[in-house]
Image (cartoon, rainbow over the protein chains, first blue to last red):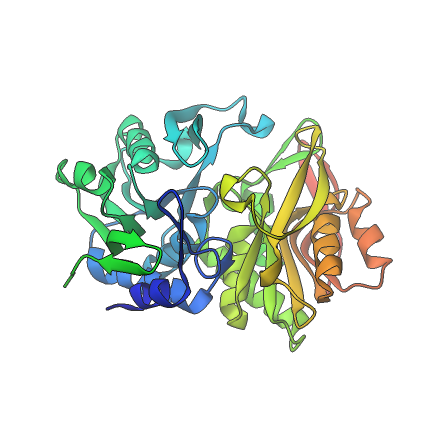
Length: 193
Length: 193
């Protein structure tokens, strides 16, 4: 069992609706030592993938993406959930993302000059469930003509279809913890090397 | 001139409405080397302040806050802009923040168990103008009974009242770049040690 899996068992909480609360170390209060391990582990798994930019989605994707970009020493771009008056006049890549957590849709945007066909992008996010956020980030990479080095996820809900859907496209998807099942009193991880 | 000031001069753009665009290195695309320097510089300025937690506000405060927490090796807590169904049932600190950029108000929240009277908090944010976001984070620290070690800001608009207002309370406010005036073709920084 790796550090993230151990931490999920010790500090995560399963709530009704297949919600895993990890806000005491991953997405509200952030354990920086764990985040550094996450960055190192993504670098170990993706190795010399030629990444030129790390791409994530605000807000909770940013901490693991910052430490991954730090370990690779490349810039980070975080896609924004559209609303910014500041961004209104710019030339944007846009993709629509459905949120099952909030029961709505939103548009994610990246200013065009920050991703191009010259880039090799490593996508990082905190959670993967149905894969909607990742699909939106992939769509932005497609619009940019950028190569995608892979997708690095902290926690994948392996009982939901996102991971399989993304892997079937041939992309390298690395999830540091894959939960195959969870109940009030037990969490089962998929075995990984 | 320090690294951030140099970068603002080389890559920042002044837009109508006293907007400084720094989205190519600070708050959309993130220069990780610069962000590491920012974390080190906050640590140099606040020194042995006894910080136990870094506090910021999603989303663009997160990258400098992550690197500052990394340099101090303490947890980061990022306040959320209220809307999360996941947070609805929890015991929250709340503060109302007025946004002049978007012309509205929003509520920022922190789950109570992540800040307490045992904590000494270093508040980090990317911009300081009228001081509304910082005042909201200070209000959350007040509700928690936490000690505030200080406020670290990347870019302060020195021609707006936030910095003076916060310093008059006796808090240590460290802004890595303080802009005293800006026009289409010139930016003047306040001299600092």
